[in-house]
Image (cartoon, rainbow, N blue to C red; front, side, top):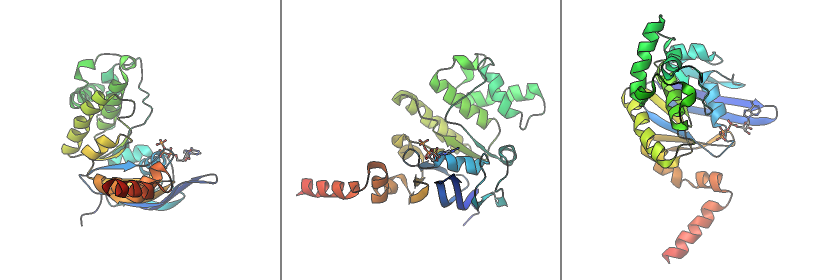
Length: 253
Ligand SMILES: Nc1ncnc2c1ncn2[C@@H]1O[C@H](COP(=O)(O)OP(=O)(O)OP(=O)(O)O)[C@@H](O)[C@H]1O
């Protein structure tokens, strides 16, 4: 099997007495579009922060494209080709959309004009071309989500970690954003997304990991994990899978 683009091996992180991430091992295949799901507080964002270098693991190793990057800072990981988005989008509100995107492009572009030109190309990919000269502070929530995507895309990632880019969007905005994410992956960027919008996960991801209370409890296709009794229990509480099974049997009888 080909070397994974990202490999986590026994990664753990505690905050005081709280084991937020417990010995997580997973391989993200190059070219894949996969998702990390789990109930609130499961440790998903902490795991992203560990991957991208915003947090250092207490134990375990992280490798990107075969190189050990454990404990490496985010800017070095971004140079290597791994960037993440944030749940709370905080653009430079007074700057234009173009200038905001150019911030990401500066990682590779030496000059300001080059970075601004790159920003234009990226804006086109995420559907923000018409807003390029608008102050970022005037964007709608959906626009801000696109801007967050654009800022990270401008760093020319090989692996993009998307932290709930669909959160806060209405159903139509979600439906408009799904093809944007799919096109990014189709363009050769490996994508790992944290997502609560299960319908989008079902449409987009070919592989899903499920985290609950800091531990990976399931892994497989979206169909496989949503049928997994451990996943149903994690979301809906202890005994739910059995109860649902009994109801289904009674209805079938
Ligand atoms: N910096 C921190 N200090 C202390 N506890 C933290 C810190 N960051 C996260 N936690 C705790 O670690 C646990 C995992 O949090 P995390 O944000 O990673 O979960 P999550 O799966 O991303 O949740 P959500 O879906 O609600 O965003 C939670 O109990 C949270 O309160």
